[in-house]
Image: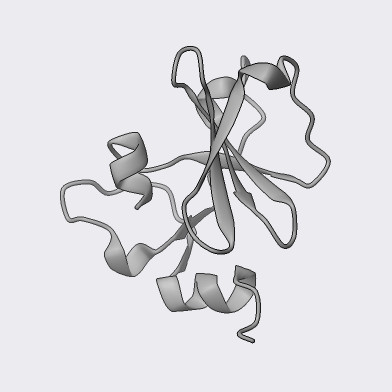
Length: 109
């Protein structure tokens, strides 16, 4: 789903729940699942965030940060669904889709 949204791997920064945006009138969101939404600029279409609804946890694309020198690429999720046409060279913690859902998805009712 993220590859279809971005056209490739989605590289984000976990920004927690204390996120604020200027120009909120220009932000629209799409419920991509029962438990998450994707935010985008309704003027230019830029991807702004992926938000876990229950935890109000934001993942913001790295391209939105002017200076990424302090960022560390330390984990990959849905590694079991990664296509074979790319591979990152640095060692990372790798999580399968099942591990991601076990960690982040809300409990079933």
